[in-house]
Image (cartoon, rainbow, N blue to C red; front, top):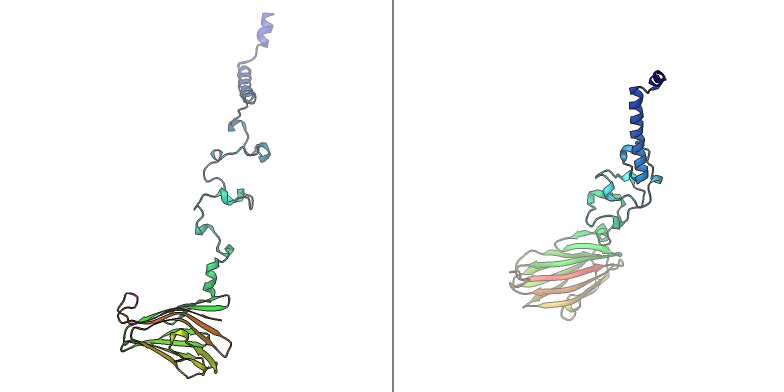
Length: 250
């Protein structure tokens, strides 16, 4: 009987295998029982999105720099998901951007000779005039819009002289200097190419108001602003003459 039992006693190898099996099973059983299973108990690539409860993954669960663009569903990221000032110019594809409203003016902007810039707003071209010159300086073109050209020159005296001309293709146009002149001096009811409509200021003159030009080609030019002859006193400088206005043509 004793010899029979000895013959049936398990071998050392079997004992070790049983112990190993017990340990491995007890680990899984413990994890199941306690609700805690770590990554060692999960085979690679076996966890699917359906295995994760909604809203359970937090930022602390994600390794830095591991989420890529291909991991995001299109149109799911909102402005509230992006930190303030976190998006840079290099992050934006330029051809997807619309035009900034104020930049629409740049499409038709040109440069007006020695006067500032000319821009188009709703089909109406606008030009800023900021002329100032010292006594004896050369004439400068300060307006070139809609067929009307005006030059300004600060003569000896000093005197401010403004000379208007109409374009060669706009005969029988009309020009009124308004309150920029005394009476009807310089006004042209039949303004033809080659004619000079001239007004001159002297003796500390200061004129403001609206100048109007109606071109025979259909253009209308208005100039709102002021003209000054003031010895050594234009805009805190030693200049003697100045014209500061905004011209528009449509």
